[in-house]
Image 1 (cartoon, rainbow, N blue to C red):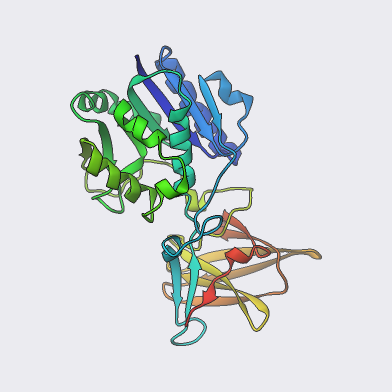
Image 2: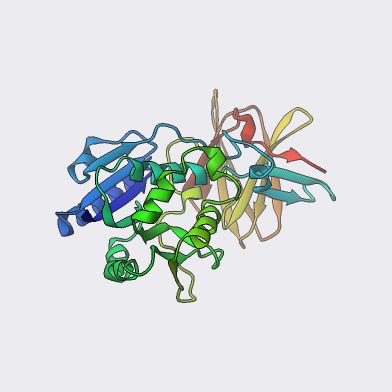
Amino acid sequence: MKKRVFIVTGHCDNFDKEYMTLSLLEKIRNNFPYDDIVYASHLNISEKFQKYADYVVYVRENPIENRDICNDLSESFAEFFYNIPNMNNVIKLTIPNHGYAHHMLISGSMRILCHDYEYYHFSNYDIDYDFLIEDLKKRESFCEKYDGFFYEFKYRLDWVNTEIFTINKKIADYISQIKQYKDYTGFISLEEKYTNFLKDKFNIHVEKNNGSEFSYGKVDFKFSRSDTLRYLNPISINFSICPIKQNNQIKIIILHKKQNHKLKLVLHYFQGPETINVEGYPGCWHMLDVKHACIVDVYSENEKVLVFDLNEQKNYGRMIK
């Protein structure tokens, strides 16, 4: 049995993420030259990553709940817009959930390993290396009497965080056997799913946070800068966004959450781009007219935060009242 393996999952769809991931893998390799490293992704993996990883895992299948997989449970995960455009109206836009796709990377990575390990260290690509290593000995020492070491999930302290954790072979074997969606489903989020079986079947330690606002990863997946199209996630800290079709016309609803918040939308029509600037305060909203379906870039405070396609019907909210 080998001592340890580091499993890193990434989604390097821009240069910044690739640089961040390669830096993390390089530091792990340089400081743990005799331990194994796995890098897994749903995107094609550059040869650059092979320099540092013993295993490179490309999982082509990338199913997203509420887009590729839809059921009553998944569709309860949604954003609701109330009293827009008229009083008593309710608009619902389901939120794309990447939890199952993320699980497939974790599970698949463990399933292809040729060796058994005392410690399986899992982390996302955007984990700070110093944080990853800071508690390494502590996590491993806890795993001598526990099956796994987890941190609290920042939004629900009774759930475990899935951005970074350490487990033994017992949990690794169990996770690797959850392959199909029918075995995975039953919970809204990856954190809730893992919490359920970990606390029910294993003896785990959950580390309390320090009570302050924190994030283990550096990148907000929902609104990280990307040059690639994604399914629209309507929720941001500063605003919510929802395209609708009303009387055969396309409109985009913007709900502001921040004082004097400035947004710029660039609509890429065939005849050339059109720019729309809006500014608002918490609770106010705008409804923008769109000439026809197109690609939309959204900038928040002059930073590009997302790109979505109005030709994709699943990006539209629907009036439920």
